[in-house]
Amino acid sequence: MAGRESFLRLSLRPGTHSGAWRRALHGCVVAGLVTVTGIAGIGPVLAGDPAAGKAKSRPCITCHGKDGIGTSPIFPNLAGQKSMYLMQQLRAFRDGRRPSEVMGVIVRTLSDKDIEDLAAYYESLDPAGARPE
Amino acid sequence: MAGRESFLRLSLRPGTHSGAWRRALHGCVVAGLVTVTGIAGIGPVLAGDPAAGKAKSRPCITCHGKDGIGTSPIFPNLAGQKSMYLMQQLRAFRDGRRPSEVMGVIVRTLSDKDIEDLAAYYESLDPAGARPE
Image 1 (cartoon, rainbow over the protein chains, first blue to last red):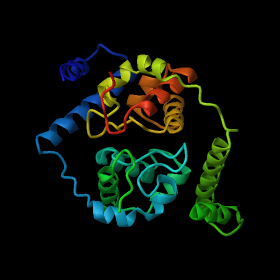
Image 2 (tube, each protein chain N blue to C red):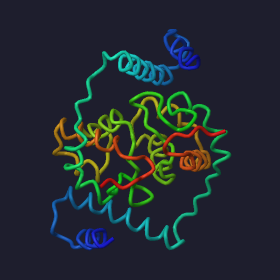
Image 3 (tube, each protein chain N blue to C red):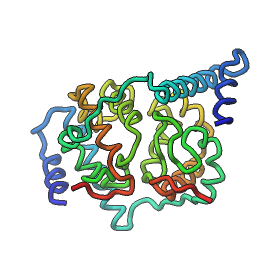
């Protein structure tokens, strides 16, 4: 944790970094604050329902597996992945900020609630790939 | 496998889908072919060296953990992730195809060999997060 704290302190000192590094460090500061507020219980409440997510995950199975393990070397494993990261990425695919012809089409009709449920479901799966019942 | 085969057959029938869906299905067909050629041993040889990747992973630890488990809710776990997916994403960050202020800066100086080594290292880690020695 000492490393992270000094990293955050470093990033808050203005004028010591190039623009690109400053932007990168700013991203890390935002991430750190998200973590801190999340731990303190004042962050956004994650309302995802794993059971609802499971029901909504049928279109994902072809590529990401029934157990959340990718069915090809280029399809990522999702089992046990952090739900907040998954939500962030699903929204980015949907909104075009993470360009992907495949994912962009598949997620374009998802609501925020669908995304929360799917993220909660995949986070709940065994990262080693034990098959859910 | 039957599902995947019918999915591929479906995608090869021309004129039955909208442009967006056709592009998405085309992506899946390409992915399927990568899988098939990989299984048949005629795909690209993965030359990544996990030991070299471990040595190169120091800048990744702050966010992705010593054990490949993200240190914040928005930093993804990398432990046990498929190396081909990791290589693809690292190249996409480096080349700007996956826009990210944080990752774009961090990976911009990586060579293809660095990316192969890092991907092999993270794939070799326990997805449940057992700490490497």
